[in-house]
Length: 203
Image (cartoon, rainbow, N blue to C red; front, top):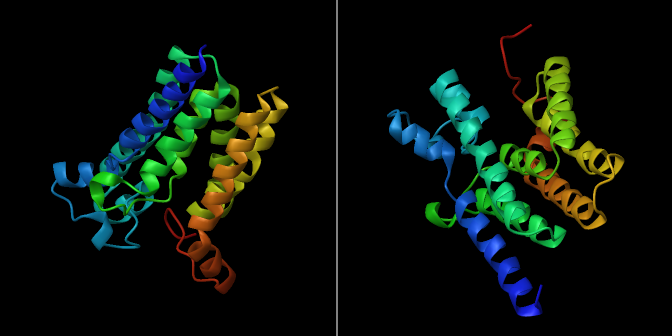
């Protein structure tokens, strides 16, 4: 691939995926179902967990599917166009950053867990499956959405490396995991104070 073509595809993969990621599923679903804007209720986070608290299971499920789909579609489209891991990384990072800082919604987005997980599935179905199982196990064990998310993505780069993934993609996943930890810094502080909200019925 010529250098110019390579760079253009790299830029296109990032920008296109960023724009796709900027479509906030939580906000669009809540508008469609006439539910209060998730940025104005609960934690103020436009993500599936907050939508579950304010809008119920259907709205949360649609939000989750939309966010997962953004990351998955972005990576799969780019993988269909090129075999270069750098382009895959651009797609994964673009969709993830678009969700965090959506250009269509004043750059006020969610924490990116579901979109990042969708991108992981696009990069490796095995890694995505291991991540989903980890998330489910941690959610059932602790009933903290933040613990499940952080525990899952702490393991994602290792899972991808374990199945023989490319070094550049492994590094990108590690970078995404670090950003997720930073985006969850408030949750981490509440966990340490014993103030974090659990998901599901009290037990």
